Image (tube, rainbow, N blue to C red; front, side, top):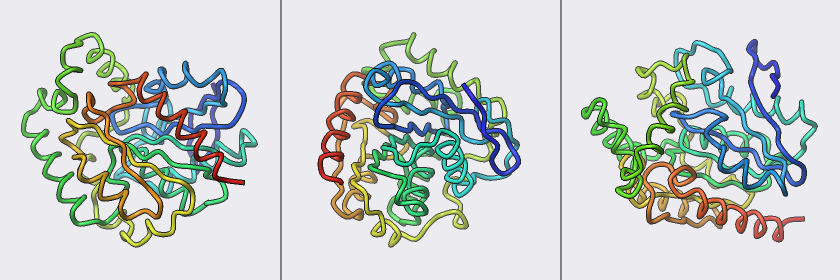
Amino acid sequence: MAFVRSHDIDIYYESHGEGPAILFSHGGGGNAASWFAQVAHFRGSHRCIVFDHRGFGRSRYQAERFEPDLYAEDVRAILDDLSVDRVHIVAQSLGALTAVRLALQSPERVQSLVLSNSPLGIDDEFAVQSVMQGAIRIAQLGVEGMRELFSPQSLENPRSLELYSTLGSFNVDVRPDLAPTILAKEILLPTERLKEIRCPVVTVTGRYDKLVPPEVMQRFASLIPGARCVEFEASGHSPYYEEPEAFNAFVADWIREASRNQP
């Protein structure tokens, strides 16, 4: 457990285990603790790096909008502090904005990308409209909206849902009114930038995701050179949490494949 100074705030991070490095980049409802199932699985064979985005968890910060460029710079500061040159990145939802920015700005630091259930911070009309519609529908449901993020199978496990909610409650600086700004025009990158990503990429979706529908991740896979899309049949918005064993097995296979195909 440590902090690194980046752009005037202290960014919280943890590093577990030894071996090829995997950086896990959490979503808007999570923080470093969200990746407990992945850290437990991979720490015996990999260096697992988890962190709290600025404004989340222990990275205390009052933001006026989402700042994906700063998120990427914060990750660089973490990697520099750990003397880690290259990482595989597993990114969920909001966290994929960080991952894509880092891959574009510092391609030499990113060995591969797993981009899960995310609009990626890309100004793609189909993706933006699909996510906007999903967000509005969920917001209209109020407190019941969170249930729309999960698969029918996940909704049958109340303890798991309670844990998910508890982990999110650590984000004391997060302002719910900022949620729509994740699709603000001024922070979105042109769709054409996806063609600049040079590392191996896989997009991930959940069959029941009503916030970022499977069609969005399938479309992004078609726009990124060499990418493909993988769908988890018993998941909604968070396959890493809803199907951790299957997700971990997939990521392990993906990292082996991506590593074989690179120097």
